Amino acid sequence: MMTLFLLLAVAGGLLRLGLGLVLLQRTGTVLACPPILALGIVLLAALPEILSPIPFPLPFSLTLGFLLPDLLLRRLP
Image (cartoon, rainbow, N blue to C red; front, top):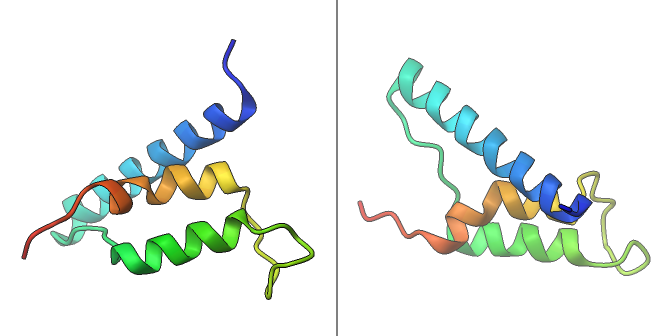
């Protein structure tokens, strides 16, 4: 049985894939985030609520699924 964490991570990845394909088809640009910024956002989402400097509205797993391609793949110019 799949856990909620895994389901949200897959949902984030599918959302990223869908948005990337629509953006590529309509404008010809690639959806990308610098790896350092992606790591910072993932770390901000991973912090407990009491330690977080700003409230982060998305769950950690959804954020991780959305930004995982930026952390794993490096796009060359």
